[in-house]
Length: 244
Ligand code: NAP
Image (tube, rainbow, N blue to C red; front, side):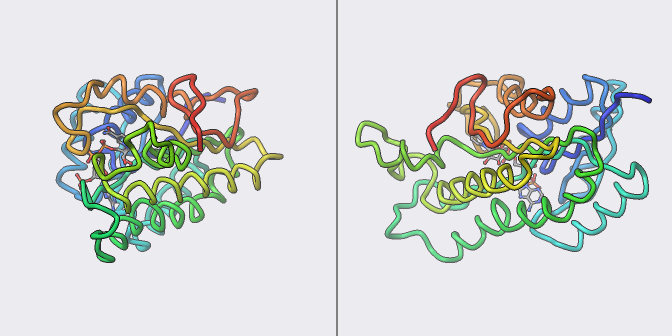
């Protein structure tokens, strides 16, 4: 049997997700490149296929449950299992908005993708991940989701200087989902972890970010390819454990 794995990366038409897709495909895996915009998703897929990588486009809008079902169906019919799910898609809608001023529209929009859509997609695909011999679920969180650091007066991440309350809260919620799912699945081969990718130069991270896409994809790819004896239920950046 081939040890080629089937991996799905959400929000992979650009940024960190695109690079995660590239790195996983470079390791010899079949990568399903999820994107909500067909044109952008197909263009990104073509780019990776031109590098001789086994990458296939899947139209997937994390906040649209209909595309969750079409994704599940495609994977079921073509592969019968899913080995790696990287929940990378994310939005930041309340950049530098103080907690007293964030609108419910910003909160709902942020949670719709970063939390509700991500949870619903994961639940939908879980039966297929359970069919894998070594399922891996990776959630792209952020250090901005750390309650410990947010409440530390010596840290500036608890202010609106970086992103906003809705974004940070969405990552804290995603962290809680990660821990609970990991605990629930602890007696199975599935490992569920979340990570901070670092501050990465992307449309979201901005021009001043110090890390390249290659560097930003490193932690999620490590978690996606953890060996059997690897950990589950952790919040990490490279080999550093982060405070919840
Ligand atoms: P990015 O460049 O803004 O890319 C975000 C990706 O998510 C895009 O492909 C976007 O698609 C997609 N997306 C957004 N909403 C979606 C939805 N409903 N369905 C499907 N795809 C959707 O951001 P990034 O910097 O690469 O961030 C990737 C992940 O890392 C995010 O979860 C982010 O919160 C996290 N993160 C980033 C940093 C950083 O410094 N960059 C730091 C910490 C954590 P469109 O092109 O269609 O908009």
